Amino acid sequence: MEWTKLLIWVAKGAILVNAMLVSAAYMVLAERKIAAWMQNRVGPNRVGPWGLFQSFADVIKLNLKEDIVPAAAHYQFHALAPIIAIGVAITLYAVIPFGDYVIIGGHTIQLGMAPNMNIALLVILAMTSVAVYGITLAGWSSNSKYSLLGGLRSAAQMISYELSMGLSVVGVLMLSSSLNLSTIIRSQADLQWNLFYQPIGFLLFFISSLAELNRAPFDLPEAEPELVGGYHTEYTGMKFGTLYLAEYANILSASALMTALFLGGWDVPFLPKLLGLQPGSIELALLQVGSFLTKSFALVFVVIWVRWSLPRFRYDQLMTLGWKILLPIAMANIALTGIGILLFKH
Amino acid sequence: MSAQKAPTNEMQRLTFWERIYLPEIARGMGLTFKQMFKPTFTRQYPEERWEPEGSYRGRPVLVMEEDGERCVACGLCSRVCPALAIEVRAGETTKEKERFPELFEINMLRCIYCGFCEEVCPEEAIVMSKDYELVFSSQAEGVFGKDKLLVPVAQLQERLEFLRQYR
Image (tube, rainbow over all chains, first blue to last red):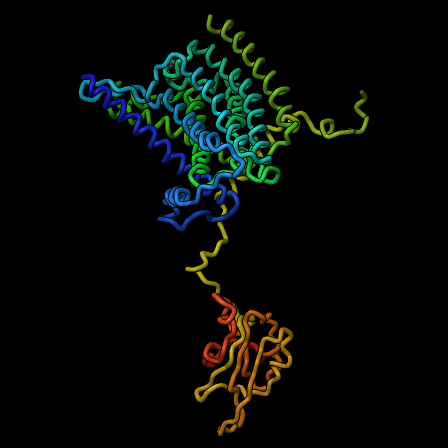
């Protein structure tokens, strides 16, 4: 009995990590393709049909590249930084519920590594803070001025936007009165999505997570014209690839988090009742996972879409937006939500 | 503050909706989304090659008839070449034209595709072809001799007809 449980855990973990890394690799391809389409180009189309195997070609190329470390770099930290980055990115997936539960051969299997953790949201906020270490360490240990500037910018930006990101979630917490992601998703059942109750919160969270992810229009840590490449200037080969993959894995986890918090997570409206699907059946589980992934990847598309539409902020504009605009709005949103709950829920 | 006062900075000039940027961002994103469905104009090069018109000046070639080259080794092309790319050494032949080029070399590393050689040629013996794919792996390979320069007249009809319009 204990062995099967352990086996299920290991299998779930293996599937999750591999699916995550492969989808991160494919998001790089998606980014290049979408960028190309938006600029009336064709995009990568040489490797496999429609360039579908480009991601594998990229990974093979990165693995075959020479690993160059600057002579003045702190070698240990230089090697540690990508590990922190990818480690944090993978850890975030542990608490995300991709579906409810499924019963196979008498075993109740939760769809997710730890979907019922009662401090899931705090774990996510804590891990995104740790992610700063990976990037700052990468910038500092390279011993290059461009890398250091990129790392510093990233640290300042992530700390600034963490506040409005954390505060924008508070509205959701007040509505569902739980930090448990599964409970938050259940409280949004039947199209009672938090998006409709917390539109400002969603917008704030989306903008702050763009800043947290170092994505355009907040990609100052990687501003090529100013910083050559940013915190990963001095990285080559698979170390660079790991930093890059971690970045894309974070985009997916942020999208999954937004799906769970605001878009009803794995909730499928009406359809399960219409088809008469029982909770715990494989069909319902597939439907739920499909729904969750569809919403997540739609958000990933929006993140990519934003990057190829908007110009980069100036550094002072970035700080003004974070501290003077988003933070007060987030606070006002909490107050408004409180008033709303007092008036309508009691 | 009176309303008549001219706006002094950008923040005063913009309306409220323009100042919060969100509608403008939505407009910009709508634009990029529309672009996604527009046709692309990319030519898939190695598979889809461009076929130039007769007016195109590709690499210069020597016209070859059934009984050999038209060239009479007068050396005008070599004389006119601004890049000094052409070298001709004349030899005698028993044919009607009496002279022929023993050696005819064009250094393709020097050629600037100006077409002066073709213009000055009294025999229509050297013309610009449609060939635009020139690759060498060494400097010596860039010097084209008669083996590479001679092209059957059938392949150059379009260019010869184009030239006749302006003679």
